[in-house]
Length: 139
Image (cartoon, rainbow, N blue to C red; front, side):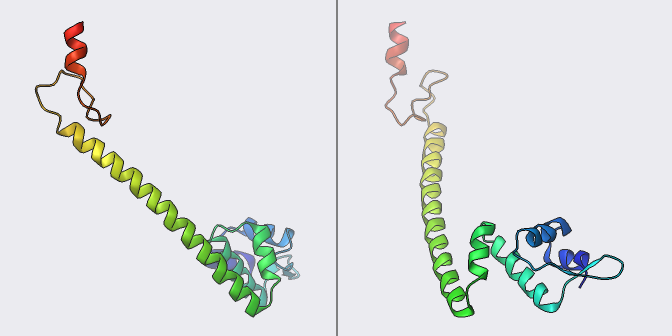
């Protein structure tokens, strides 16, 4: 498979594939007489694996380490890595959900601010009892 075909199939640029070659992740492609890079089936399979691992936001150094492992160890390493990523992502989601809930509460509180409060009162947004009346009385 030529480099342009492989890049298109994998959804990456030819520059990306050349970079993978330059850092040793992908074996250098064979060259035709016209100078075009041609990848044999085993290189195509490896490129697919590299792109799939990059889709997990793994740095190239980590991918390089993973690709040196035998199939059994690789599978175990990937399971552990995915489990860790899932835990981290679940925690991130929980934190973001808490922040969203807090924003929703403040938004609703501000919407429900009684009309008898002074114009510009944002005490409800701050989750405070309204002190604006006292402030305005002293002025």
